[in-house]
Length: 231
Image (cartoon, rainbow, N blue to C red; front, top):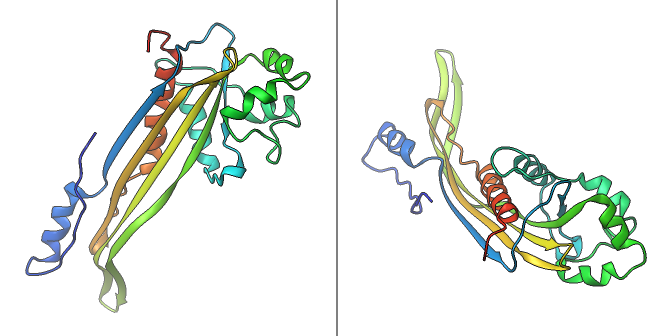
């Protein structure tokens, strides 16, 4: 994907206008890395679906609810779209096994879960073929610059340059209920730099790393699940 070197903003002999113009190309710059590990062939039959869950809180996961919603909506659109079983409906149907304090910590714990009476039958009734465990978050990794605004009798405005960097890192582990094992994992990492140059009027140029991570991860998930070809 697009390659962006670390940005260094230095106010020296060049005018602020020159700096602002030079940042328009670099601002909002993002680098994206999508990776996939596939353990077995996949596919969906008519009537089958996936359920997207946040990984167990025992793992210290803090994935944003909005990100899970974004993934769910995106995989149901466009080419290779897949059906998504409602998360809360799934949790209620499998009560109490997927409640926050009792849910399995990940795909490795699911074989034991399937041995409990009634669990396999409830899963079959739901039509869910794959459980997708999502973990990750978005964090600010760096920031700098200076931006100030003032109001005067003759007018007002802002002057300066501020910037920050965000890292969005998410992964999705896919567990195949039919095979009773992990089908693999997909991950998305996005690094982005946002800039607000201001000469009277601030011009925010934002790198939306979380949205880019959602798009990349959802797109790869659709291909991963619908591609039934060889590994």
